[in-house]
Every structure is written in structure tokens, then in C-alpha cells.
Image (cartoon, rainbow, N blue to C red; front, side, top):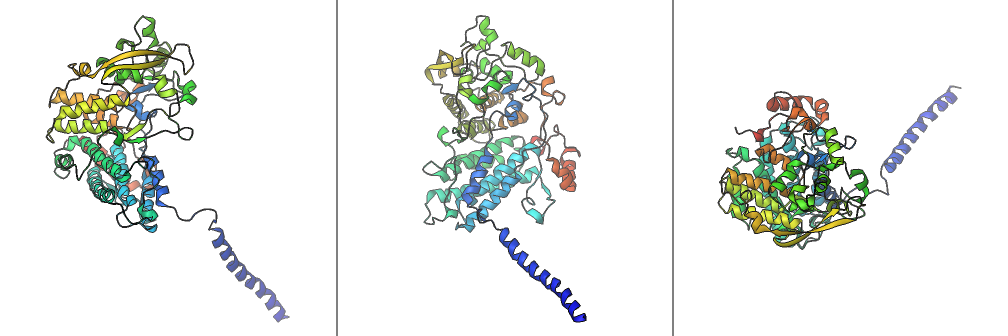
Length: 534
């Protein structure tokens, strides 16, 4: 009897062992999905990173640059209620994985993905730092090994970014100058929708890397005396060594995002015209500058205010274009817009189709103005006026405006549906435009600098994300207006806030960073390091 009981007790135990072993094999098998790849090619990761670089138009960033306004609260407002920063840490993790996969797929120590990876690290870390200040960098991207990363100072971030950019330039130059016999996936650039169709994509990226470095140096102009940054020398090294540091040569070298129907539509297009028609209007900061300079770009980017036309003012008169004060009360702006007081975005250019205009991320016109500014400030020698004029001509050409001759412009016919326009001929003469005292370069002095910055602001319309806002933050040019409609006690804030998760997930380091920078407060009006002269 005892023997029988023993056997009965033992069988379930043995069965348990067998089942456990069997389940383990089953679970291991189930954890590997035969229909999903377990590794990824570096080109696929690159494609996603490139898309995350893209700063789109038709966002709050344009309103914070005071280019246009939203007048209908259902769609938004014009307040500078800065919240959390743009968080690119997940993108940087993909950069890290892309670099590793390039090696796994046969890439050499110097390969296109590691070279671009250095640029991406500099690009995304500085983009985040420009928004908030200090950031986790050295301790970031370590996964579970470091769940509470310490913050690097903004200065440390920029110094490291310049090292990455310099190394990226070297690697890209090496790769672009000599085709590799290694045709492995990890050594062959694929998935590049910016420059993949050009004859030498890596050479194009090398130019972008150096143009972006100039942008960062200009953004640090207030810290020009900092010996550790060596801003003047860095700028001079790039300008004086074009063989080592090639730059954008014309608008064909722009890093720009192209729209393709039906898969990737321009943010303003036929589909949303019905919703947007009167919900958005132009800003007086932008339109007022154009009309004061008698700038023909206003005929391409905006439409005349119908209230002005009702008073007999010609559609092609600069007096017919009026932008709203961004600080105006939203309800008042809505009423005035519907009464035809304000100019709207040009219907034909921005709504008539699905592909709009390219969105420039890093462009030749901006590069020209950055070099002109450096010469004006005495960082480098050269002809600031030449770069200033080239920047203007490049921007005008982007809108199809000839130096001399005539331009056909289109405004939506009153009462008609999208697609029906009145056309007008406008005569253009760059020499006459440039001959105005408010446009002609005033020399390497504060007046000349102001002219450079104003023209750069005009060229950045609908391009390059927050660059127009950063310029105003750094130089107060152009003057941004405030009022009830802009919020924040009628102040233009100086920074964004840290992600809310930092307060709970990285409390000690987050708190220390705020104490070191902003007296312990995550204050959007706090002054970050790069805005302080000492």
C-alpha cells in the first residue's frame, strides 16, 4: 500500500519536470517570430533618423517666430506658453543602434553610418540644448546601466558637438573622395532621401556638417570671448580652408525636405484648406518688414487684405498687405481677419496643390548671412556685403523672383473656390531694391548687422524650425511684439522646460541642473548659459 502511494505521489512531480522542460522549449520558440526580422539594416535606421531631423512648417515654431498667427482658439493661439522641449533621445538611441548595425553588416571603422552618426549626435544634442540648457549627454544612451544620468553643462555639450562635427567632416571627406571596394551593407550608404539621388551624397553631407557648425558658432556669439570655445578661430578655420571644410555652394546644396504626393503631403494643402481658410493670418512682424522694405516676396507669400482692396488700393500695392500684431487679443484678431483687415497666406503657393515648397533645414542663404555676420563682427576678414547680397538673391530666387524683369503673382479670386485666381504682373529690379537706404549694406557696424539679421529673418520664413526665434532671443532682431495674445505676462520666453518625466525619474540630477542654471526653477524666462556674456 505504501509503495502504491509513493508511486502516485511521484508521478505528478515527474510530470511537472517534463512539462517545465517542454514549456521552456516552447516559449523560446514563441519568442522568435519567424515573420519579423531579428536584426535591422543600418539604412532602415538611417531613414527614420533623417525623418526626425525634419522641422515642418505650419507649427507653433512659425508662430513663435512671428511669421503668422492663429486667430481661432479651436486650432490654437499665439501664446508663448513654452512646455517641454523636443525630446530626441529615442532618435539618438536609433543613431547608436545604426552605428552598431553598420559594423554588424560589414562596415569598416570609418563608414557612412558612423560618420553621419557623429553629425546626428551633434545635431540632436545641440537642438535640445538650445531649447533648455544643460542636458544628460555623457551618461545618456547607456540604457539600464545608467537610469539616472547626470547632466552635462551647455558649454560641455557644445564643445563635444564641435568635436563630433570636426570628426564627421574628416570621415565624410575621406569616404567621399575615394570609393570603397567594400560593398557590404554597412559600408554602403542607403536610405538617404535627402541626398541619395545626387552623384556623391557623402560630399553633400560634408557640406551640411560644416554649414551647421557655422550656425552653432553664430548661436554662440554672446560667448565669443570664451577661450575654451575659440569661436573666432573655429569660424576662420572653416572659411579659410575650403578644401578641408567644404561649404554649401548654392541652393542646390540645401538640406531640404521634399514633399511627394500622395504619401507625404505639404502641411498646408487642398485637403485642409476648408478648415484653414480664415483660421490663420499673417503676422505684422513679417509682413510689416516686407512692406517697409518694398520687398516683392510679399506678393508671393501673402495675399492683399480685402479691406484694403475695398478702399480702392491696388492688389499689387505694398499698402494692400497688412499683418496682425501677434499680441492682439485672439477674439479681436478673429473678427478683424474675417472682416478682411489682415492678409492671409498666399493661397496658390501654399494650398493649391499637395507638395508645396521644399522645407529647408540647413540652407545656403542662411549660410551666407551667417558668414556676413561673422565678418561684420570682426571674427574673420572678407566682404560682408557680397555674402549679404548673395543671401538675399538666393532667397528671392527661391520664390521665383528674377533680379530684373517681371513676375506673375496670383491671389485667390474673391468669392471663388480654391484654384481660381486673379493674376497680376509685378516688375522687379534688384538694383533698385538694393539701392534703398534700408536695404543697402551700411558697413561693418551695428546698422549693417541689423540689415543682415533682418534679411536672414525674411529668408527663414517657413524654414529651419526655431532659428528665427533663436535669432531674436540672441539679438532682439527683428523686434517681436507682445500683448494679451502672446501670454507669459507679455514677455518672450528664453527657453523651454525639461520633460516632465525628469522630475520623477531623474529627480536628483534634474534638481541639481535647475539649481545650477535657473535658481532651482524650470522657468521659461530663465537665462541659459549661452545667453550670458560672462
